[in-house]
Length: 460
Image 1 (cartoon, helix red, strand yellow):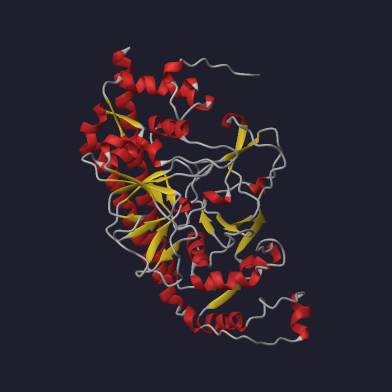
Image 2: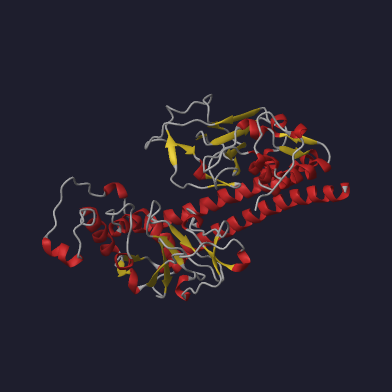
């Protein structure tokens, strides 16, 4: 059914004649903001609004190169993290990121309009899919929180350009986004919560790093010592035994790792420690209404610090019959078994009722007293175990893929119980700090929205 919307000719902008821009809900959002009193545009609040540029990535680089995939809503992640070298980096170059810069993803369906703030003193660089906001007398943490509120996000939706997946928002369009003056006086109170949330994330990352270092010290294996041979041999009986002819599988480095682990630890096949299940493959269209659907965790919900985020979910219709072994439980491990992120590991920290886990992903349910499930999740992420996992992966299809039988045969080293306990304590403290950080961010956004909503009510 066609939807009609009549727009007064006086409201037409010379550069915006598209009907989508004048949607009634967009107009209503601006009208509500105007009713709160005086507004300020981003262009008036910030002296510097500029897109980044395409950097020259380098394997030997030390400076983080931020891309859209690395920027979340008031968060960062290291998904497929790239780096640039000190030679390329220049403090005056376009794309240089300074402490307290606001970063906005400016392209792509699903990524456009993500807003975060760079809270670190160390330098970074951002590519041309990210816009930088800098130099303002207002609190940047307050502004970042506002742009992540409903009032900010609606303006991003209104101001993007393009269609068919090729959407973007230009610095000029960002400069037109408006902010109610009334919230600026709360920069100290609300902005400090956002700043504190980033501090908590930094502390969380430090604890996570300590847990990883503790495991790798105990494992006592240096990846740089792995054999790298251009030529190596195996025999026919080994191929017959493995039912496999695959040059990757028979690389000497895998035997080298197993020999090291077996001489220092008790090794147990994964299938003797845990039950492995394939994920659920949706065969129907997703349900739009969450109340009528079963939430489905996706591979993209698995973060780099084991956490499985439960936002931005898809929903399978309630009428679909799904086997109970496709649902996650507290203490489950999720491991990606197919695609570009094969080997990525997640952990279900808390009870999540009736959530499905996806295809291209295994669930690992530990049943043995030999190893703790949280510790196993972290162990599977270590370099040495990721290398062993690579042995199970085949690349004879379009994308990397492993199977349940191959994964089940992985050998798991059983580390000393006090090491497992120490690692678990560090990981749980890390997770609790991330939870506290999220709560602070939600408080900040809620306070901003409440201030605006109360002003709208008082004006009506």
